[in-house]
Amino acid sequence: MSSRTPEECVAIALKEEADESKRTAAIRELKTANECDELGALVREEGIDERYRRQALEALATPQCDSTLRGLVEEGSLEEAFQRDAKALLAAVDD
Image: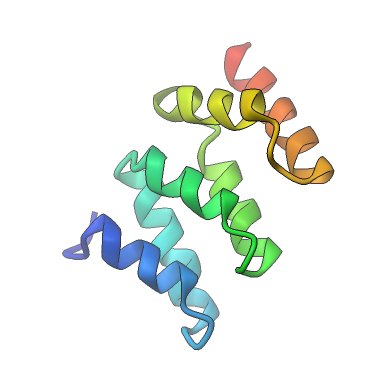
């Protein structure tokens, strides 16, 4: 991971004024560092653009983050499209 802390990466990902490439890079850094809880929080954050939530959701599709992804599926609090995608990603990780 870069010299940024997970909290700084989350702040950048949430910052509407931030450049798209910086926001995407921040999410990628969280994935690289296996910061599953932070990625899960971004997925739950309805106040950010859907594309960043989706990037965070896809970043959870790793063996290291499968428990966070499973938690999102089991709590059932995501919108229908996100819930469906989370289930599909979880099934792919479980295979």
